[in-house]
Image (cartoon, rainbow, N blue to C red; front, side, top):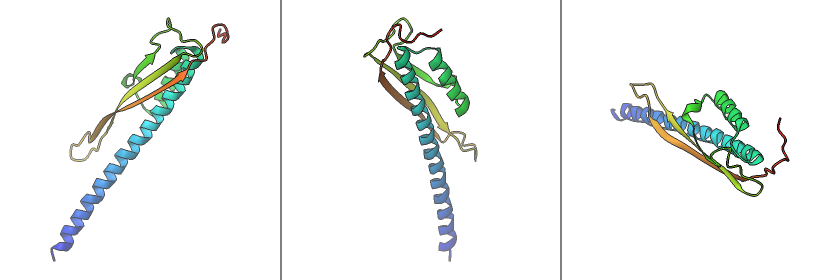
Length: 136
């Protein structure tokens, strides 16, 4: 007699567990894919110009606006680190982006149930030849 109510409660708890886990995993994978794609866009732009410039920053800011990500939450590690070290044709440029991802559930004061860093990186061979891309 008591088996049915106990089994029902167990099934509801199990369903909530899998539903919450699915939301966290699917949301995390989608965010990782978005950031990974933007990392590749940035590194390809860097390969064209030889360094991280305003075009790359505008692209990243546009991505942050569209994706509901604060630009201040993204940490970038760039090679080359500044415009004085321009990588010319055949040299490697790379970028690593780190984003602290957290997913919360606002039931019973559980504000954050899943918290981890999304780390993406990409590299490309520079196609920059001095004098070829004349940018006004």
